[in-house]
Length: 330
Image 1 (cartoon, helix red, strand yellow):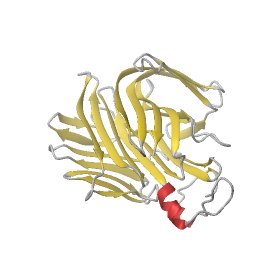
Image 2 (spheres, rainbow, N blue to C red; image 1 turned 30 degrees about the vertical axis):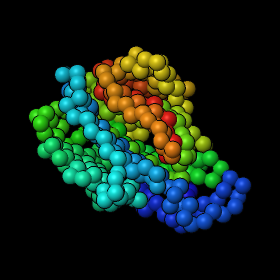
Image 3 (cartoon, helix red, strand yellow; image 1 turned 135 degrees about the vertical axis):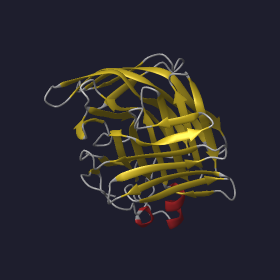
């Protein structure tokens, strides 16, 4: 897999044809390509009213999903579900980040993430056994969005491909026992993370993301992380009306004994200088013989300033988004 930044869709990820080697350079058997390949997607939307997050995870050892809606005005989850694949469940992961379908079916619960290359659009469709239905979509063609596409070296022989979007308007709705959320009417903005490759079997990262409008109406999005994608390049950037501004390495400081205390997010080049105040969090911890997770995804509001390469400042106030800290063995 070629490393670096890509300015256009890359097409299918042909991991089965990759010559996977051991750290000492020995060619590994073909079945190791299947057992070592890993991928996940995270897609959702935020507004001043709510935070919606949905993730699917795919590896030989772990096939799972989670979904939630947190209502800021009610200060509670109105929806929170998690699923682990059992015998008879259906889990498929799309190998093209810009085309195809990832399908996760757990009994009567169905989560589908679709991508259409012709329209540069992404869509989340959810049907749950309690009557919940979610249809969330966005397009990277408006206003000519500069998608982050990046592949970096991972360990001695692996690689990680990451494709990120934030700061695009969301369309659709969520309905169920909790009522109805009309995304456009609530001024919601969307985000998407597609990551796949020969990722580390034991990994740790921190991450921060927001999507929304500035006081002057500009669409803003943020994606910064540390712990992954830092070999030669970083995935750190923000968007202003779809135009990407790359950032240097990011510091994400937080109190691991009090995750609801304010977080501090900054970049070494001074382009990112933010404080994040959580309103709540989704947590998943546990350990088995092959799998371990210490996952905390917080949602709340950012304040501070972003600066582009020309020094133009964008004031950030009450911008909805996420932070995350995760240890994972998978």
